[in-house]
Image (tube, rainbow, N blue to C red; front, top):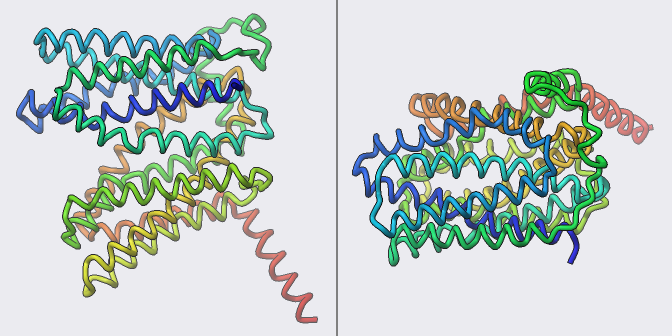
Length: 416
């Protein structure tokens, strides 16, 4: 078995475990507190430390071998879940225990995500990054596909402690698989790294992003996308399908399933067409991605007089298409970062990227929520994505200008 296959198996196990908890935990907290406001406060409190510590984690991870950090993170998650499962079995439902458990799980899950991203770069040749990122996308989505259903089933039949015990077993298996990865670091080990303070390392990471124009451009584009369209699942999709078209909530989950199908198909397409340089077409894919969302918005506006299920069928088709194009954007962009960001600062780079995204997404959700309540979710969807298209055109105006001139020249030659 190859090194990357070991990482993929471990990732499938940990991703499956990580997809169960966000679905089941809110149900248990709501049952325990009997209050939506306390439940919301609980998850705000538990997520803040991991978000605020993300930049520090990125710097800390660089001091150690990424395989060891990944193994340590998964094993710690297994230990935390084992302890929590035992406490629940003995009837210790104290709110403070649950808060501490959730905070620690969020922190070590973030650490696992950051270290495994850099470990992935160490294991894969640069020429095959897009191919293996495509395969990773397929496996990630397949891993989490049945997780919510299994989690809620076990929770309903056996209780929350049994769910946590299953997570502990999955994390133990993931740690065992990680231990078998034979790793030769691309940077020849950490003994050649110059000792720098945390502040120096943090500033170097910021300086790299600020001075590398291509990196900065993609970084800012990701922030723009997160602000304007990351709220689809929380605001615009339910606002259109449930609030405007009054579709039953029992079938609303098909929207996420349709998107996941598109993601899986896109991952297969990328893996089978690894010779295509998707990165060269990323500006067009950005625009195409937003155009599909604009079409969903216009469909909602103009099909209101039709049967709601006619619109919903069209929406599901567009969601499959959207999932397909989204991965065609995300995979080359991730591969670009993995190939262009030096390996010795990758963890701090991805930490800063994650930190910025975690700050900008809630602001985008807040903005979109207020705008959607004022002018409608579908109109907001259209406006947000038109703004994204404008931003993309501004970011790639030289490339778009060259393409347009080449098109005009080709037409002129054909006319002669």
